[in-house]
Length: 87
Image 1 (cartoon, one colour):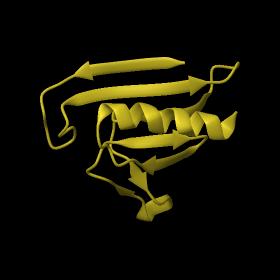
Image 2 (image 1 turned 120 degrees about the horizontal axis):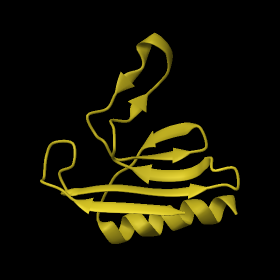
Image 3 (image 1 turned 90 degrees about the horizontal axis):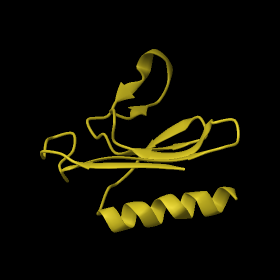
Image 4 (image 1 turned 30 degrees about the vertical axis):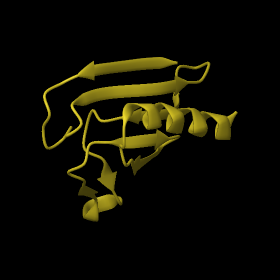
């Protein structure tokens, strides 16, 4: 499990002023669950795929889904809930 959290200047991409990455890896080092705001989330696939202006998202297996960031405590609670679903 890897947690990286850094306070950053507030911006359109990170209006809450936090850059974060919370990741659960399997024994092979592959991401099982991840929450981060390192890049814009993509919506859809193929040539019609759109990039969200929002950077908060979660990785569930190979899927990327936008995530509605509320606050740091809720982020951590939501991360553990996703892990509980998969264990």
